[in-house]
Amino acid sequence: MKKFIDVDEFVKMRQDDITRLVNTALNRAGDVVRQKVAAGDINATMQDVLPLLLYEVLVTNTVATLRLAAEMINLEYADGSGGPDN
Image 1 (cartoon, rainbow, N blue to C red):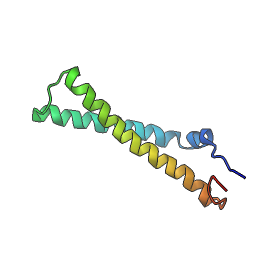
Image 2: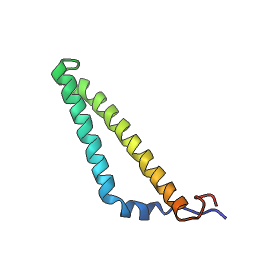
Image 3: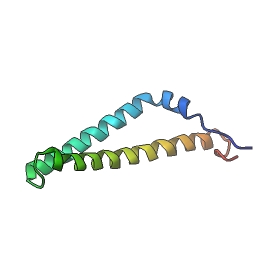
């Protein structure tokens, strides 16, 4: 018998954490862009800044998403159910 993870419930329980992770991703991306512009590595134009900003947000957000997914799966193991497939 397969057990399903209630993603909606997990998101409701972790809404503050998710908001914090999104804000962290945006702030980190902004810091990286600011440093690159200050160092003269890129110009302060949308053409130069936007790709770097997008990349930094995606990288940080991907790591945060993987951490949340691992936490969600690990909760199933902690419940003694043996994970989502058991």
